[in-house]
Amino acid sequence: MTKFFILKYIAFFMGSIACYNLHTQFMVPVVIASCLTGLIGSFIPFPKSSGNHPYAAIYAGSFAGMCSQGLISSYWELAIISLIGAILYVLTTKLFTGFGGRLGSIAFVSVALFVLAKGIVL
Image (cartoon, rainbow, N blue to C red; front, side, top):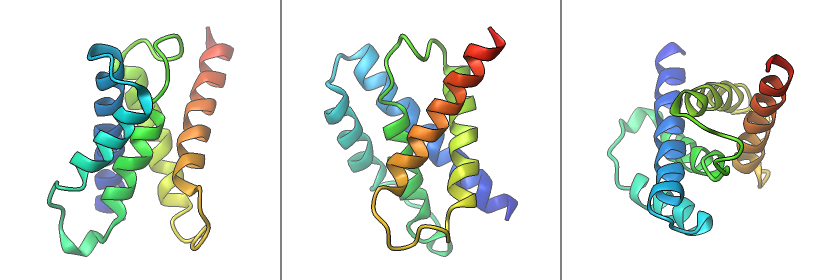
C-alpha cells in the first residue's frame, strides 16, 4: 500500500508541476497545458502491476496544476497539493468506480483544501 501511495504521489506531482510550468513559464493556455501533460505522461512506462492508476494520477495532477500564480506561488505548495491529491486519490480508488469526473473532483478538492488551510494559517 505504501508503494502504491508513493507512486501516486510522484505521478500527481509530476502532472501538476508539468502543467503549472507550461502555463506559467511558457505561456501555454491552461487547457492545452493540461492536455499536453496528459499526452506526454501517457508515454511514461510504469509497471504493469499498477495498471492505469499512475496515468490517471498524472492527469489529475495536471488538473490541479491549472491553478493561477495568484493561488500557488511556489513548488512547495504544489508538493502539498499533490500530497493531498494523492491521499484523496488512494482513498477514493474504489469509491467512485464507474462515475465520471473523479479526477477533476480530486484536483478541485485538493486545491480547495490547500487554499482554505493557507487562508486560515496566514
